[in-house]
Image (cartoon, rainbow, N blue to C red; front, side, top):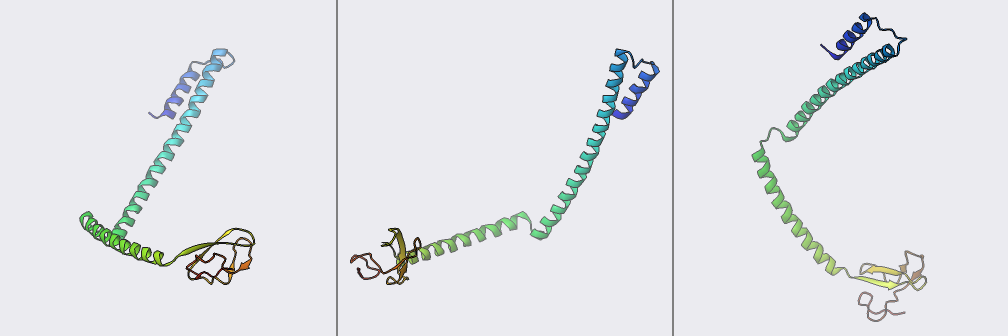
Length: 159
């Protein structure tokens, strides 16, 4: 017997006892039976929602299984692991080579910081820039290199 049926049975028993709803005990029992009826309806709604969600999750799981099957093209786990290991080793070697090349390039590019005569902020320059025509990113002033005689990048241009 479901909960709604049980509540209906209790309601029938209460009516069979001919409880007086004007009496305090009768009012109390009638209110309890009404609350039980409401609770039974809510529980039934929750059960329906749970069943719907369970079916929905099963459909999603099936769809995900199909996507995984399409993505991996039926490869078994052993072949996949071997493939990944070989790929990881190649990636590490490529990364090491790229890192070495970047280190060599960084050694060639020397960064020099000069002070803007207008605002006093530091302006970062590398050896690819024109040291005679520098534009300060802070204030927009144009000036020539003022780094002094010890600057190897501009060969000691001075002011």
